[in-house]
Amino acid sequence: MLKRVSTLLLPVMFGALALPALAGDLEQPMKKIGFNYKQAVKADDAAAMEKHINEMKAQFDVAKQRNMPAAKKEKFLEGMNEVQTELDASLAALKAGDEAKAREHLAKVDSLKKEYHKYAKQKG
Image 1 (cartoon, one colour):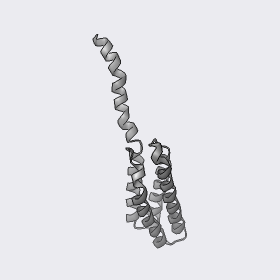
Image 2 (image 1 turned 90 degrees about the horizontal axis):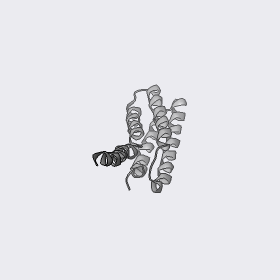
Image 3 (image 1 turned 90 degrees about the vertical axis):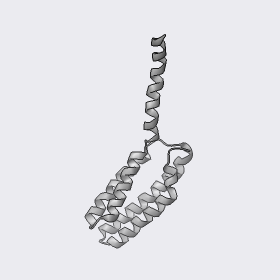
Image 4 (image 1 turned 135 degrees about the vertical axis):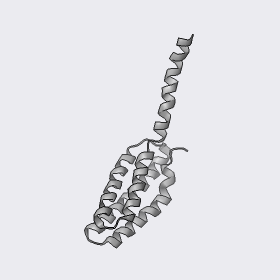
């Protein structure tokens, strides 16, 4: 009897362990994006800003591949694409030597985050 119960419970236990991994599927890349955003805003020079913006762009590519509720995916990807457009514009401004314009584009990223962040939430 005990062997039968353990045989039945084993898949349930592994399934329960996998659920938090799926729920947090998007959490790590989003945390890395947030960290690099803060570092880019605080950066003292264009090279440091560029490094952090490029890291954000790399994490966006990771985040886009993650699982999420289908009902939110379209809006989430729309927001991600808008943010990536601002990041590209920020990088272009840095390459042109206009750090102030690059910072303006980073500020737009913050307002887009406020608008679209609710679609990145895994629940609901």
